[in-house]
Amino acid sequence: MENKNLDYDLGIIGAGPAGLSAAIYAARGGLSVVCFEREVHGGQIVSSPEVENYPALGKVSGADFANALYEQAVGFGAEILYDEVTAAELQGEVKLLHTAEKTYRVRAVVVAGGVARRKLDCPGEDRLLGRGVSYCATCDGAFFAGKTVAVVGGGNTAVEDALYLAARCEKVYLIHRRQGFRASEAELAKLRSNPKVEFLLDAQVAEIRGDMQVESILLHSTVGAPDREIPVSAVFVAVGLIPSNELFRGQLPMTEQGYLVADDSCRTALARVYAAGDTREKALRQLVTAAADGALAGSSAVADLAGEATL
Ligand code: NAP
Image (cartoon, rainbow, N blue to C red; front, side, top):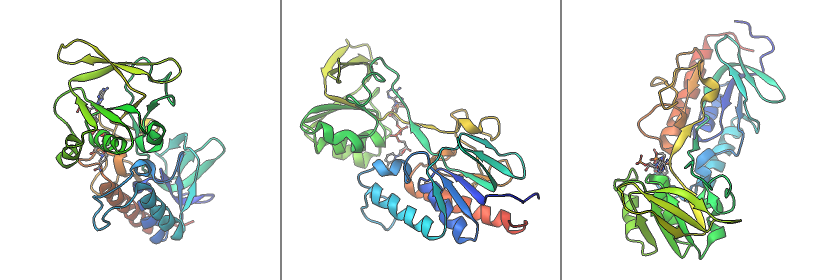
């Protein structure tokens, strides 16, 4: 294999729990590792006020968890570059990762870019972004202390956001388009017993209204009831995730929803290319499964590169 002028053994796209766990396993396994992050290390978990289901950790804040993971990866020698990979050439023996300034040549790649928040795609959403429309309750909730707000969605994120906001706001409407929830029953039970929370079910947000700030939302019934306008100061959108895999379309197999397909060892169809964390097709998207994927991808890279020439 042509191995001159390589920059690192392993390039990791994304420094969330999956990417940083891959960095720990790969760097500890003797590879030179670079991890690219376009936002903040830690990924989505940074906005979780409290994680209580990571085995053996009890309760820990998402930000503390992310920082501990970062320190551990760096401690083993991984480099974290706060730069966006804008294109990737994964087919060849040498993999090329392009950023705006530079092209990095690596022997193997872990794709761990995670997922982005889905938008509602209704009038007012973009115009009032940052003026009451938010995708992160823990980032922006404090601005609406004592106010009435809405959370949209029926998954764990919406329920967690609503609980977080109920501790700060006067009232929280939880708006969901049907009666059934994807969120876990344990979290839902906490929400149901919270007197500050009102459920508005079978309802879609048709429009977010306001001049300079969010003032109200127009709700369209999904079961044929009349539309309603509800005064709120903020709308927290938590309607799911979309994988950030457009860079790899045509190079790596993906599902109809855009999740990467990888095997039990996180190997994709391409040699020395791995997919880890929320970005890949899997049954359970949790912190613990992201970390486990990272461990598998990092270890697979160590094993696959072991028999080959080194830098
Ligand atoms: P999710 O589980 O996919 O839920 C998205 C919710 O948004 C669904 O209830 C969906 O409704 C609704 N929705 C989707 N598109 C919509 C639209 N255009 N308009 C209105 N509603 C819409 O997403 P998530 O809550 O962000 O969670 C993502 C993953 O992270 C899940 O696997 C979740 O378990 C995990 N997570 C875990 C924790 C935890 O364990 N502590 C915390 C947060 C997230 P329908 O149900 O009708 O489709």
